[in-house]
Image (cartoon, rainbow, N blue to C red; front, side, top):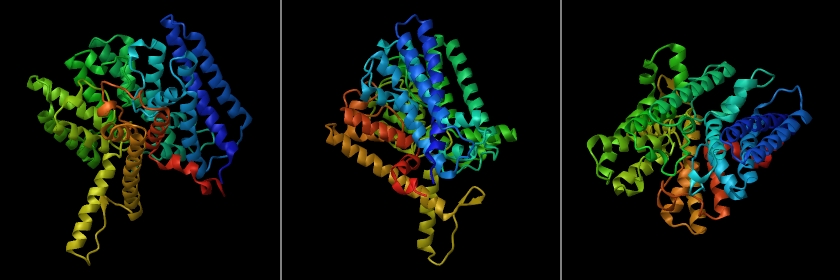
Length: 479
């Protein structure tokens, strides 16, 4: 049975944490002497008050149970997205639908925007957009677990309800310790990338915001032209490396650290396929770049967009809608694949495709040898049929929701390419797509109802469908 008091207590703590994070945005406004200080401070105070009140009124000494972890994760993300709209609403830079879309896009690391001119926004709001990426990337709940995981909380349940992907054997059973390591790694990546971008010519503000967006595989930029604004080969190669690392499993990074061996990367089947897909797609995309340029320029452009799309970061170094049909088809395929399980990337995840492909091979063997008993393995472990079925169901349900979203978008007036692209890119947390939602345009033209529907798709994609859908099932709330 789900106990509302237990759930609301932890949601209150999450909301209060978001409010504390808003104080950094207030500091940013003060540093740049902006007139948004009062409104942003009010947003922070309101958020902290709501969160603190919930946590205080529903305080308890009870241990959270299995069902309640899904309520905390699902409702926690919804609550964070709602209070996260306050900086946009109170400063007057966005209406309700636009603020919801932009905030959900930030926390889910989608990177789709409704702003046609982000350079017209104050530094404080640009920083808030990037900060929502960074908080949502590794996961608000994972950070929550790493901080208070030992205070009467079944941290492992919260952690596993938050971390993406079907296989988690790379994780330590000491979940609080693991969560802290993941966030420490996340912070270290952010600091290192910020310093490197500073050295390569970005100012501190741009370097920090783009480090947030890269490590979180988010994609919000402080410039209308995204990474193309700097026209720097070195910046692009550095971002390619960091997007690649953050699209890989942070649990695998933990395993490399725990065993003190880089060979763990080479032994991991998902990482192998992830790397192979990127290499193959990069080489294939070389034939799809219509824009003129030398070999290095084409290779860099191809690698940048391939890594940016498969990791669902969404940064752009050129307008890929001008590529040939071959190049655009490669990118469209990568949008459907996504990054690795346990990473900050979105999408279906490489490991699910790998398990599904292995299942197809087994079914072919069954056709050739009907009486044979063939068990499916992943690495050195046999996979339960229930896990394989869950993977296949997820891929089907994910695809169904993308199609349903596309139908809704076309019903609201979008053309087929734009509607399908918007649905796929929001469900996969990619951001820029094709047609009228391409990298050089935005989602601002979509009707308000469409923005709410796409926001729901972003949340479904980020939470991998089930934790959010459970909240709408009456049986879930019964004993």
